[in-house]
Image (cartoon, rainbow over all chains, first blue to last red; front, side, top):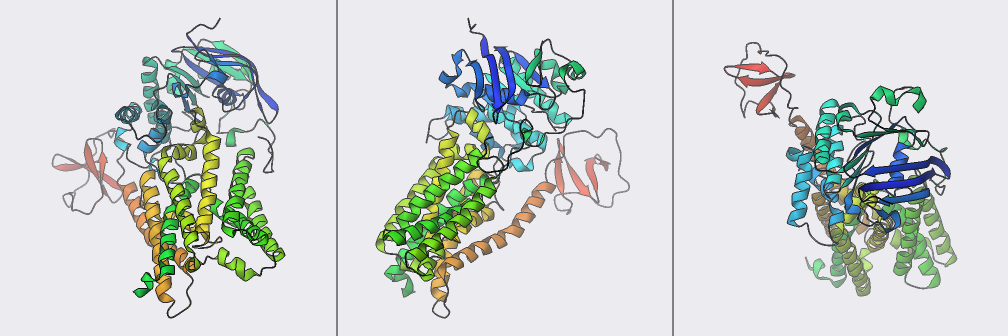
Length: 264
Length: 331
């Protein structure tokens, strides 16, 4: 029943946030080597769906298979690369570009073993795919927002995965950096990687997309040929085009809760 | 000099050395997660542990280890379950721990002076057994912090990424919390529970003024911590011939002096680095020649040279001058 080409297969998937169903009844199949754009307005549930697909949020209902194995039995996490929605790659302590990218290689490494030559080569290669080789030894906090986004992509690349989930990698990124990003994604696509890209607007990434899925209020409203940006914001797909500012915390699906032990 | 040959002093020096190594090692991960005050929270909880030890007549050190590990795990659980209220959770434990400690000490029939040696440290009264416990615990903390640094770094850097990468994020989070609790109790006798967090955070803040990578920050913080704790102890010991000087506060003040020295240095280094960041590799859209130019730009001309693609631009009065034949172009 499951074709071997199916990399992601979700049947009747629902994801709840704090007990409120956000994504409901989603059937989604992503074939090997496909470049899928998951689109929709703010709060339409596209990020939540990706969080369900990566196991960051448990599915309320439904069955998920990754690379043909049921989610519970899936352990080949080095085959999955995830680029979370972030405003930057920096943390409370300085860290170099190389170190952040190297942390993506962990899934391929054994505990307490130093980096092998193959690890180092993969890390250097990941950095060069996103075009940051010259900045490899710099601190990430010194880079621009767009460059930091590319660092996050390189981090996902370092484990040499077959399937990528990218959550809004182009949000707040200037055009030259978007082009560098598109170039990196084109390289991945060319290598046969499967890519699930969450985006508001495709912009320069549009030529890479094979298939568009548009979410509306937690359900799939469209699944088919790539759409132009303005078509995604067609009234039939939910709110009309509005200006998209980053949603604070991205948690507008449930009322804010204020005590340390509340569910989230 | 014969002060250093005294046995109690040698024990104290050994304890200071180990504390100085271990506390900043954990502290680096706490600062990385922006939980710099977590050590303080655990320190306050440990006060209750010490008091329970006094009340039950068992070892205050081990009671503190047990209670602060429980407290640290509780902080971690609250942090994981709730979303934005990590600081509120910490505050609840701060006050609960300190109030509970003073309350239970009263029940134990002890006065505040006993508690004081734990609150502000009493490094010169360590027994040989205390030093052994400190040695073992500190060694465990340092080994785990350095040995598991790739995993701990990844989890502290980006939990969601680490989770999708297949790491057991919860185990590593609890591990860091437990390590923090252990190093709090290790440092308890050196600098005291109320100043513990200083040894975890100040050396890290000092190190990151000068560093660019995580690895050097971790190692430099451990070096700075060791320097501060051993140096502070020695200063306090020699000064105490003339005036009563407590080692704990001296260690913390010395660590802060280290920060005060590196801070302006860090500002200068960062601003130099920013000024010298290469310009984007975009060619100017038209050829514009500068006005009559009084001097020749070069390595020693005093104008900042910044890489711009395949050449160098000199920053001159808000302009960018690039050599072009016999004249300079505006870039």
